[in-house]
Image (cartoon, rainbow, N blue to C red; front, side):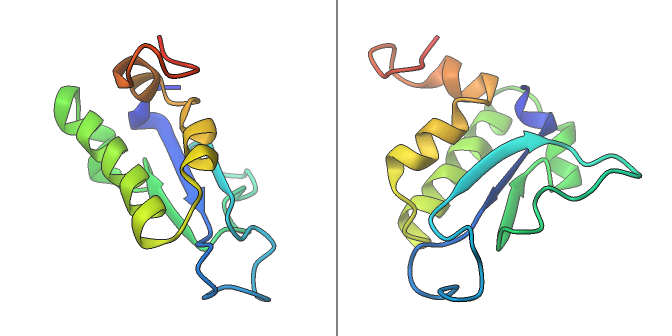
Length: 107
């Protein structure tokens, strides 16, 4: 899935949402929500990626940078396990294409 079309959703694993969300420590990457569809991001505390309309218009390295900034934010700020984030981000074409080739899932 192209980064400009990928919603990213997660719930921090730092105690803030304990007891409030069933998705603590989880990350999901999925399609944009179309009119008439249910919002698959509802169980999560945060959304990123193509949730930002301006990001849908970005291309090239600025878009790649935003993908990795989302990754860094959820891992460093929100306590998401890096491997959990990595597994979810493999759904994003630009992520798979830009990680080191010796990392599982790289293209």
